[in-house]
View 1 (tube, helix red, strand yellow):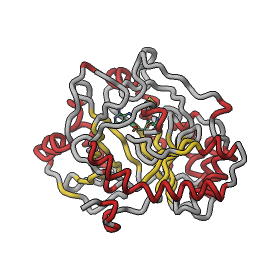
View 2: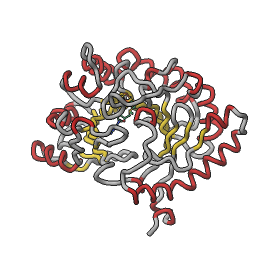
View 3: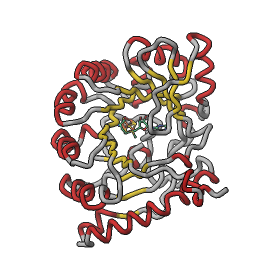
View 4: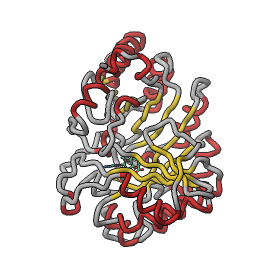
Length: 337
Ligand code: SAM
Ligand code: SF4
């Protein structure tokens, strides 16, 4: 049956991933590959705080969006980010506000972000080995691992809960660390999420060894400690498991081995105001910034976003049919991951 016609199969789309900036202080090789022609947005092309808040209040919230994740590029590079977090958290309709960050600037900002109303944070940490970490993030200077680790510790101290660590698993690079990374979930209530590496705009990265499927990772973990399905269920794409007796969980995001388009409950807003209905697909995308700046009434924008929402089940269905192939005119850092 066509899921577009089966309301039971269509989740409510109430979750917006908002890219605050396309720039980043890292150059992760799977996200902004070296040599890629990266053209950063001009400052004047990025949605201002006021424009973003207007879109949230007058377009997205009336269309039913109540859960927001701030991402990038690196969201902590956005000027006055704490103030913006506070304003989004203070919107009465905001049910959930989260951030995905590389953690490099987090040590000094964790408390302020928490005080501003942020409660959930995902920090990317692909390796526990400083050298491997630097290789992945494209760093040639002094290692950055320690500062990211300090950011994670600060987030833990401040009380972010859940605190999630995102690991993109890259064959031949960090796949020998799966057990060490999984072990981080045992003594603390940290949630380690293994993400299948996606070939988005990164060609033959690290020698084109492909990707490792989540079940292979689960087998390794199962052999060492056992593994059970967790009672904690996220509302995102991760399948959540737990090492018996562990305080935290292990999530597996398997977009390569297992299409979850029919569960997709989100849209993406880029830093320059393009609303994209799907990570892999630009069908129907709307240039909200240009419309807003040229005086299109927000009521009209609301109608257009609502029309796109109505189309979303069909877009999900078509994407499911075409697998993980997609339209990659932008890198992950530009789309917002
Ligand atoms: N800079 C922040 C960070 O790294 O957490 C937020 C933006 S980043 C684009 C969001 C997420 O996308 C990160 O967890 C990153 O690991 C993931 N990501 C980027 N490129 C990816 C790829 N090719 N495959 C799988 N995940 C990817
Ligand atoms: Fe920057 Fe995040 Fe992309 Fe790495 S994954 S280059 S930290 S935006």
